[in-house]
Length: 190
Image (cartoon, rainbow, N blue to C red; front, top):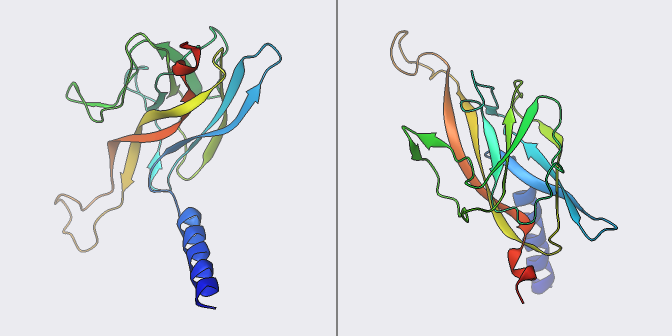
């Protein structure tokens, strides 16, 4: 009886943790398709937290974005984006910065394709955006990383006198880092 109730409590705790709201933007792999030519197509989604938005900048360099690092075997021209986004791939991944210094430190293997999606139209808080894909020649999966730059909306602090810091709502940039599956280059090493 004690084992059964302990197992039930563990299950309820696990469900409660997975059902809780996200605390920051998330990039998730929603599906991986094995194509007839042996390539693999990854489908990604970006989920925003209720307190954050994604905002375009005056240029691609200043807009909010998401970067998936070390996407080995990327097939040129295979990346797709939903409306309101722009794709780029650089050998050195675009990472959120503050005053010219990286805000987070992902593992970015030199001269390896990275996937960057930059927002060109505002994205609301608390939504999921689907439609990001990229195809690779590599057929095995490893744990990879992503980073994101988002705009965090801070409500005004109650009880603060007008004109003092925190009296008005404010928006600030936030850098995030997380893990997700990516193609594994070790599969091709014999």
